[in-house]
Amino acid sequence: MLIQQKLKQLELSYNEKIVADYILIHKENINHLSINDISKETHTSLSTTVRLSKKCGFNGWKDFKEAYQEELDYLYSHFQEIDANIPFNQNDSYQDITYKMATLLSDAILDTVQLIHHDELLKAIQYLDKAPHIYIFAITNTAAVTYDFAYKMRFLYKKVKIVENPEEFYFVLNMMEKDDCIILVSYSGETFELFDVAELKTKYQFHTISITSLGDNSLIQYTDCHLFISTREKLYSKIGHFVSNESIHYILDTLYACLFRKHYQENWDKKLALSKRIDYERYSTIDIIQEDE
Image: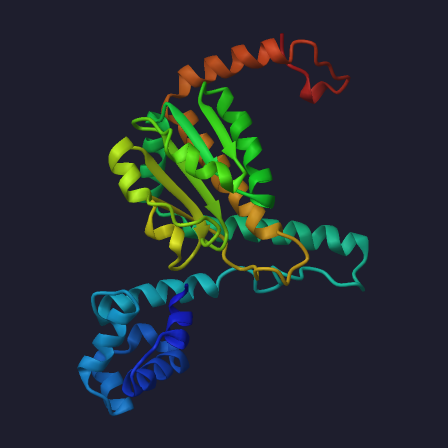
């Protein structure tokens, strides 16, 4: 859940609601608002704003303000010219649609780049590099996006199993080995049943990576590492999962590329040797894509 949603939906006292409404109205100036300013303008105590900040999951006003400013910066960037849910309409020509889709998918990637935090990315790379087995928990359209990642990882001699059936999740969790890694993919962050992952992780010492939307959700609560995807689409009122799918694909491609780079020469030699064996009969009359002998 985004901070602005919390301000609207949390159960608040009368004075806390006054402060929350004030912050929502004056969000454009959030970076310049002090706790004294808010107290004076809303005729509430300083402690009211502190309590509100803590109810939103922060230690105090300073942490709240920094996080909210970061959220607003994200929400106001990209997708200003095109709707992530309805990127084209019935009056657009086919040529119009080709350009709009290009803009949409480009925005999806640029949007996702902004959400990648270095420390979380580094943690994910370390988990995947060390993992004897990698599992991806995903269902419906998100599962389909992950198959390309599993294919690429074969060239790094990494075992990746995609688990699409929710009934299998629990069985896989109970078969985890030390240093195995699970990537859980869910746009809403509420897709998976809440297993007792904490107890199982202690027992089997495996790692978990979430790929999910920005904001607080159930999936973030029980995973070790968080990679956020572009958070622009509605749950169902959209033409397609264009933005979220492109964002997931980009994150997985980035993870593959970073893992490739970690042992670059070794991986390049393995990739080249395998590709030569697999594709040795492929031929093209187009010079630019022909391999040099």
